[in-house]
Length: 233
Ligand code: C5P
Image (cartoon, rainbow, N blue to C red):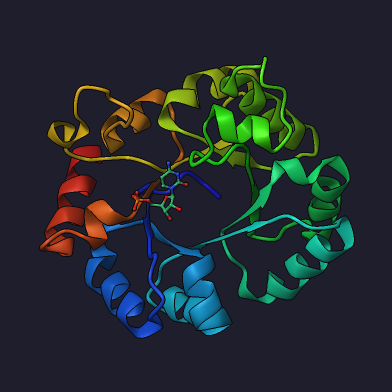
């Protein structure tokens, strides 16, 4: 994907496809694409992807695939006709799975494969409970899994805004960094500053900004999306 003019992909985390589509349509002038995640894809299937694309918006299919190599390759083959711009898969599925995924996407396909490293919902205790080395800091697991994805020639990974600089330094300018967990209003961020604004993430080198509730939950989603687009312009 060439760097999008507007890097914002709206996360449509809805179970109701017609509601989701109406929202995408309303904010479409102010976003660069739409992220269709598991909830909406399970509810709306391939048609919701086609409907969003018919609005002129590329789709990021956030399926977070994680299975045996043959099954992941088959899933990618099955969604190939939808030509999503981005598809996610778990780097922890292992090298063979990542390589099978790479091989399943035909050369010249518009679809870019993006690795998920460590879900931000997992804290250090949860990481240890699933068997990762607790002596290694969380950032070390993220770095290792991102490197595995790069070695398998995936196009990029999902990361937190705080990981952008390290991953950019490790993997260079062409590795796509897809960044969720952003909050446009610095005032909402509290003392801990565990989130960043879209502008800050872009300045640090993010390629794609995934933004959901700050737009979908705003009293006026169009105005919210427009304000974010302006902050990036
Ligand atoms: O928080 P928000 O509604 O903007 O989240 C947008 C999307 O980013 C959601 O679909 C969620 O799955 C993803 N997300 C994430 N990691 C976070 C926060 C959100 O992957 N830390």
